[in-house]
Image 1 (tube, rainbow, N blue to C red):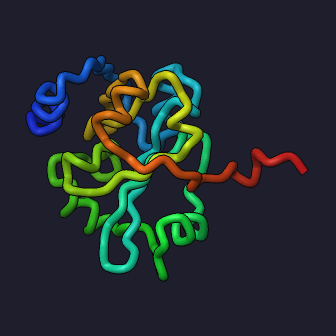
Image 2 (cartoon, rainbow, N blue to C red):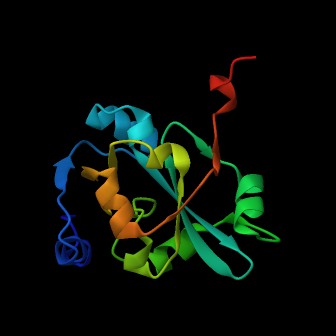
Length: 162
């Protein structure tokens, strides 16, 4: 599946400088980082949360996990859960399941970016498929996505040092 016309038009209409790369299929953000030879901290994992009647798009480094407790606290939600596969299919009809870019304005969603990801000089993320990745300066991504920068992620338990 080539870069969708919707995504290409969105990037071009905002005069964003980006590169597009292709790799073997990768289904997780960590696999994307490996396939792209990038540190996981530079690859955005896009997660969609449903809470208090609305959807919220969250981008965290591939090296971290979304903490739903923190999401509820930071976003002021009474309840929060991951969006279902059916919901993702409806929200992102031009994307392969789970390969949506963290560009909420393209889909009418507010974006929340983990502060660790926002501090990187460059960012990479799925371009709507499990084989295509967009690379750009993080400053450009932040301009484009207009996110709220917050702390929403934690290290995986296996990576923590006791």
